[in-house]
Length: 108
Image (tube, rainbow, N blue to C red; front, top):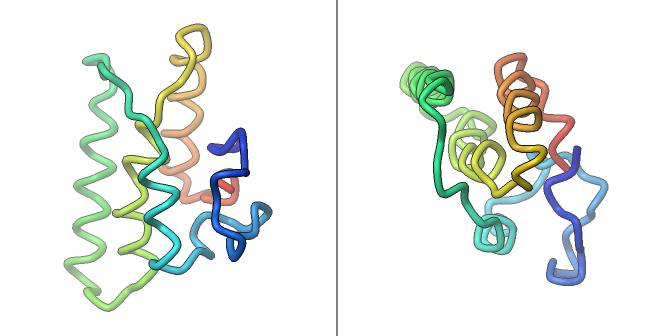
């Protein structure tokens, strides 16, 4: 799964084959700013709240963990970026599962 369909809007210093966690903080602006968000999150996705809480606890225990901070900042983009209605449920479950397994290699 790739979050980016078209790459023409990305800065030249962003390698589209990189894992999302390999980006520098200075490269986040373009990526985060272009992702449109879901308008509605179904009630049965309480897991999203738990993912945020867990990530914040990780940071609380190790405030200098750069990867943990990147994950927290990128969660809205990874989990809540807009999806076609026909794919929404399946894709959102897939994204949640990847984040819960700490498999960020799917997000490039």
